[in-house]
Length: 149
Image (cartoon, rainbow, N blue to C red; front, side):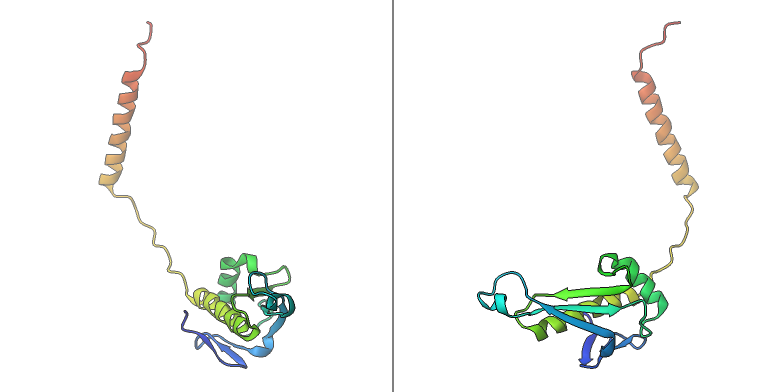
Protein backbone atom coordinates (compact mmCIF):
# COMPACT_ATOMS: atom_id res chain seq x y z
CA UNK A 1 0.00 0.00 0.00
CA UNK A 2 1.28 3.49 -0.74
CA UNK A 3 2.19 5.98 1.94
CA UNK A 4 -0.60 8.34 0.85
CA UNK A 5 -4.13 8.09 2.18
CA UNK A 6 -7.44 9.83 2.23
CA UNK A 7 -6.77 11.26 5.68
CA UNK A 8 -9.72 13.61 5.68
CA UNK A 9 -12.98 13.06 3.89
CA UNK A 10 -12.52 16.46 2.24
CA UNK A 11 -8.88 16.13 1.04
CA UNK A 12 -6.72 13.51 -0.70
CA UNK A 13 -3.15 14.14 0.43
CA UNK A 14 -0.39 12.51 -1.62
CA UNK A 15 2.69 14.45 -0.48
CA UNK A 16 3.56 18.04 0.45
CA UNK A 17 3.18 19.16 -3.21
CA UNK A 18 -0.03 17.33 -4.07
CA UNK A 19 -3.24 17.82 -2.11
CA UNK A 20 -6.53 17.37 -3.94
CA UNK A 21 -9.76 18.71 -2.40
CA UNK A 22 -12.73 16.34 -2.48
CA UNK A 23 -14.85 18.80 -4.49
CA UNK A 24 -12.69 18.05 -7.57
CA UNK A 25 -13.95 14.43 -7.55
CA UNK A 26 -17.23 13.38 -9.12
CA UNK A 27 -18.61 10.05 -7.93
CA UNK A 28 -21.08 7.70 -9.56
CA UNK A 29 -22.16 4.22 -8.56
CA UNK A 30 -23.26 1.16 -10.51
CA UNK A 31 -24.09 -2.46 -9.88
CA UNK A 32 -21.02 -4.66 -9.52
CA UNK A 33 -20.47 -7.84 -11.43
CA UNK A 34 -19.32 -11.11 -9.94
CA UNK A 35 -20.51 -13.14 -6.96
CA UNK A 36 -22.62 -11.69 -4.20
CA UNK A 37 -25.93 -13.50 -4.37
CA UNK A 38 -29.14 -11.51 -4.55
CA UNK A 39 -27.34 -8.48 -3.11
CA UNK A 40 -25.41 -7.91 -6.35
CA UNK A 41 -28.64 -7.39 -8.31
CA UNK A 42 -30.06 -4.63 -6.13
CA UNK A 43 -27.16 -2.69 -4.59
CA UNK A 44 -24.98 -0.23 -6.54
CA UNK A 45 -21.67 -0.97 -4.82
CA UNK A 46 -19.25 -0.33 -7.72
CA UNK A 47 -17.65 3.11 -7.29
CA UNK A 48 -16.60 5.18 -10.31
CA UNK A 49 -14.38 8.20 -9.65
CA UNK A 50 -14.20 10.93 -12.31
CA UNK A 51 -11.52 13.57 -11.84
CA UNK A 52 -10.83 16.40 -14.28
CA UNK A 53 -7.07 16.05 -14.47
CA UNK A 54 -6.64 18.70 -17.16
CA UNK A 55 -8.39 21.43 -15.14
CA UNK A 56 -7.06 20.47 -11.71
CA UNK A 57 -5.00 23.24 -10.06
CA UNK A 58 -3.93 20.84 -7.28
CA UNK A 59 -1.41 18.85 -9.32
CA UNK A 60 1.77 20.30 -10.91
CA UNK A 61 1.98 20.17 -14.72
CA UNK A 62 5.01 17.84 -14.75
CA UNK A 63 3.15 15.28 -12.62
CA UNK A 64 0.08 15.59 -14.88
CA UNK A 65 2.21 14.91 -17.96
CA UNK A 66 3.82 11.81 -16.40
CA UNK A 67 0.39 10.59 -15.21
CA UNK A 68 -1.01 10.95 -18.75
CA UNK A 69 1.95 8.98 -20.11
CA UNK A 70 1.72 6.24 -17.46
CA UNK A 71 -2.09 5.83 -17.49
CA UNK A 72 -3.31 6.54 -21.05
CA UNK A 73 -6.19 4.06 -20.83
CA UNK A 74 -7.73 5.79 -17.81
CA UNK A 75 -7.86 9.29 -19.29
CA UNK A 76 -10.73 10.36 -21.54
CA UNK A 77 -10.52 12.67 -24.56
CA UNK A 78 -11.87 15.51 -22.40
CA UNK A 79 -8.96 15.07 -19.96
CA UNK A 80 -10.92 13.32 -17.20
CA UNK A 81 -9.37 10.45 -15.30
CA UNK A 82 -11.55 7.43 -14.49
CA UNK A 83 -10.84 5.11 -11.57
CA UNK A 84 -13.24 2.29 -10.72
CA UNK A 85 -13.42 -0.24 -7.92
CA UNK A 86 -15.70 -3.20 -7.33
CA UNK A 87 -13.44 -5.25 -5.06
CA UNK A 88 -15.65 -4.93 -2.02
CA UNK A 89 -19.34 -5.53 -1.41
CA UNK A 90 -20.04 -2.11 0.05
CA UNK A 91 -19.92 1.28 -1.59
CA UNK A 92 -17.79 3.13 0.97
CA UNK A 93 -14.94 0.59 0.87
CA UNK A 94 -14.96 0.73 -2.95
CA UNK A 95 -14.85 4.52 -2.72
CA UNK A 96 -11.81 4.35 -0.42
CA UNK A 97 -10.23 1.81 -2.80
CA UNK A 98 -10.64 4.28 -5.71
CA UNK A 99 -8.93 7.00 -3.68
CA UNK A 100 -6.08 4.62 -2.74
CA UNK A 101 -5.63 3.59 -6.41
CA UNK A 102 -5.54 7.24 -7.49
CA UNK A 103 -3.11 8.03 -4.68
CA UNK A 104 -0.77 5.22 -5.76
CA UNK A 105 -0.88 6.41 -9.39
CA UNK A 106 -0.14 10.01 -8.37
CA UNK A 107 2.66 8.90 -6.05
CA UNK A 108 4.25 6.96 -8.90
CA UNK A 109 3.86 9.91 -11.30
CA UNK A 110 5.34 12.32 -8.74
CA UNK A 111 8.72 10.56 -8.92
CA UNK A 112 10.97 12.34 -11.42
CA UNK A 113 12.70 9.76 -13.64
CA UNK A 114 16.47 9.73 -13.49
CA UNK A 115 18.12 11.22 -16.58
CA UNK A 116 20.08 8.72 -18.66
CA UNK A 117 23.78 9.45 -19.01
CA UNK A 118 25.23 8.79 -22.45
CA UNK A 119 28.17 6.40 -22.35
CA UNK A 120 30.77 5.56 -24.95
CA UNK A 121 31.75 2.04 -25.95
CA UNK A 122 35.30 1.27 -24.82
CA UNK A 123 38.02 0.71 -27.41
CA UNK A 124 38.58 -2.83 -26.15
CA UNK A 125 34.89 -3.71 -26.52
CA UNK A 126 34.87 -2.24 -30.03
CA UNK A 127 37.99 -4.25 -31.01
CA UNK A 128 36.52 -7.46 -29.56
CA UNK A 129 33.23 -6.94 -31.45
CA UNK A 130 35.02 -6.36 -34.76
CA UNK A 131 37.33 -9.36 -34.19
CA UNK A 132 34.28 -11.54 -33.49
CA UNK A 133 32.63 -10.28 -36.70
CA UNK A 134 35.80 -11.15 -38.66
CA UNK A 135 35.89 -14.66 -37.15
CA UNK A 136 32.23 -15.27 -38.05
CA UNK A 137 32.78 -13.90 -41.54
CA UNK A 138 35.79 -16.18 -42.08
CA UNK A 139 33.85 -19.20 -40.77
CA UNK A 140 30.99 -18.55 -43.20
CA UNK A 141 33.48 -17.88 -46.04
CA UNK A 142 34.91 -21.39 -45.51
CA UNK A 143 31.42 -22.94 -45.85
CA UNK A 144 30.92 -21.55 -49.35
CA UNK A 145 31.61 -23.59 -52.46
CA UNK A 146 34.87 -22.78 -54.17
CA UNK A 147 34.41 -20.34 -57.05
CA UNK A 148 34.98 -21.68 -60.58
CA UNK A 149 37.77 -19.64 -62.13
